Length: 303
Image 1: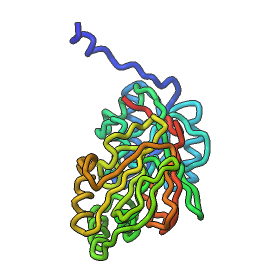
Image 2 (image 1 turned 45 degrees about the vertical axis):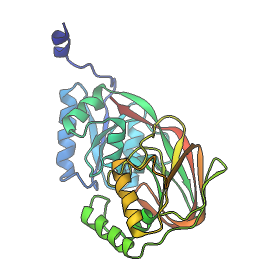
Image 3 (image 1 turned 60 degrees about the vertical axis):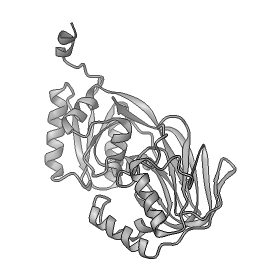
Image 4 (image 1 turned 45 degrees about the horizontal axis):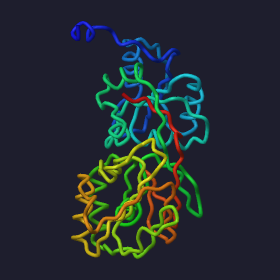
């Protein structure tokens, strides 16, 4: 009986034609027009007559997102495409992701396959679930982060990064090495739901919604994408060697439980002192920052 059940075709969940948006600037999308044709064909093979376009800026993404309202948007690209979607400032349709970035942190966090064919099947047959995001406020601007916020050593290195998108690994390593040469700890407060988590000195703070950040760093092993909570994580180090060790541990998700790592759940995290800050992959300068949860901002299709 199990063998017979396995042969039965998957039934589409999508009842209307999905709208495909291919991020023409994503690091993993080689020839966007060809990718669009391939994705539309894949969706058609699994019962969904899709339509779509290649997007190059926020205006085009807004147009295709508006066209998908009441149905399903299939977003083709990397983490940056989801970040852009979350910052459109409009009602959002349920969204399937076909990951074609470098890190694919969002796909990994949600269990979305990185194989395009498997992701296309999921885009047609999967159900949407609520996914939280983060409201990031500085004195100069407000935006939405999906993965999280970085403040301190890693963020300062990201400010040195000059490549066009976040997929240039060599440029990222070069920026990290340059920042390491002038490493210094930060003496600043970290406050979660009104309680002080840290007063420094520390090397790095992450405020996370998803488990992964940047180049696949497993910064938040306890993250849940729909619990209405964020995690603030403080890595305390006074030396370059100490900072490198903690960042290496954060890469593998083995930093929790170390005596020089503190973390806390909460609905709001405040960094009242000026620090280098990055939201997702977007540098925000040296600034004070307030981060709060936006419950269920996104509706993402997951297994």
